[in-house]
Length: 270
Image 1 (cartoon, rainbow, N blue to C red):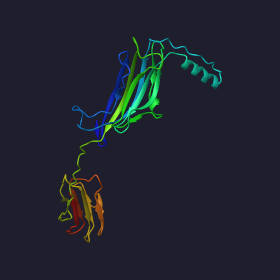
Image 2 (image 1 turned 45 degrees about the vertical axis):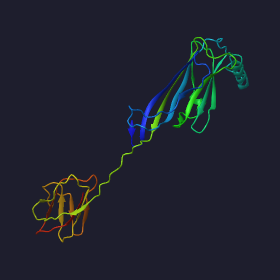
Image 3 (image 1 turned 180 degrees about the horizontal axis):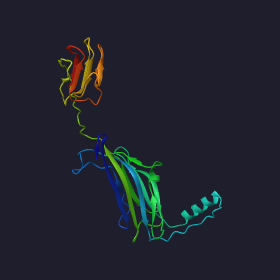
Image 4 (image 1 turned 180 degrees about the vertical axis):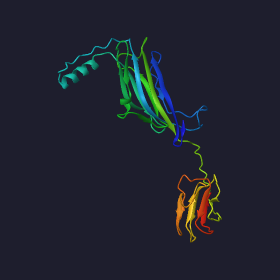
């Protein structure tokens, strides 16, 4: 989608880790280039990761055993039980890294994976930021690696799915130039009598119009041909001024006066 602020698109982050993954460091997300199917070619995106989670299905290690805490247990007891649950259960590990064009690979976090049947989810956004979304620069890469923490790598039917969404944005590399057409002023000759008549003809290119009564008679102005001294849009007494408001009316203007003939100063801008 293109807008005056740039080009936007939604992309999915999708990768499966399994027994064949090994210990390779795998790039799982980098904001992409526009391709031939996009609105504009040769532009680079930055990314806003809005969701990122793991679906964990591990069966090659013993099923997780949780040390339960009583609802009335102290916070110290809860913390102790949680540590015991973590330390004494078999686990796998998926490490997350980031790098940029100027920064080598840096570890961001370790996500520890347990055998919880049948499977479970782990939200990863909080591993990268405390905000609701995680911003990724055009040259930044998020990478993952399966790490052995004492219980081996992924084995057998172990399967970990990384799934996320990102909104990518790119400035328009070909901003549309704004062509400003000069506005020209012109004087409109007129003759106003005691009979209603058009003094300005319609003009669809009109940008503005100004009436100044430089005569010594009152002039009655309207946009309908039935203008009279009792029914009018504007009464211009001698020395009075009227400027049509925006959006500017582009049709005819009609006028009438009470006695003899006169003319006024009319400037139209096109």
